[in-house]
Image (cartoon, rainbow, N blue to C red; front, top):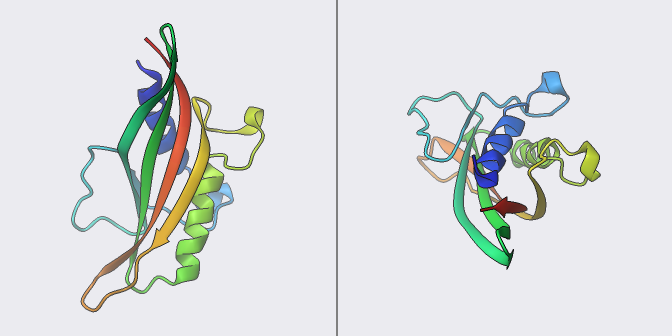
Length: 143
C-alpha cells in the first residue's frame, strides 16, 4: 500500500475518534472518507474528507516528498452556532495532532504543515451549515 493511502486511512481513523468520551467538544456521528457518499439523512454533525490535490515537491531517486491537500468539511444542522463550528475545527486539529511533538502525534505517516478554515453562513432555506477545514500534509512516498 502507498504512504498516500496510509495517510488518508490514518486521517479518517483519527477524525473518527472525535467525541466527548475521548475528551473532545464535538460528538461527530460519522466520518466519510474520499469517494464515500454521505447518505441524505445522515445524522449531524458529520465529517466529509476529500483530497483535492496531492503533488510532488522534491524527488531523490525513488523517494519523493509530497504535499497533499485535504479538505475536512464538518456539516451541522442550520441551528449550529459559530462557536459549535469553531470547537469542531479545534477538535479536528487536535485529533490530527496539530501542535503536538512528533512522537506524540497520532497521525504518523505525515505532518499537518498548514491549515485554514472557512465557515458557511446559514442561508434562508438551508437545512445545514458547514465549516471547511483545509489541511496541507507533507509526507514521504517510496516508489
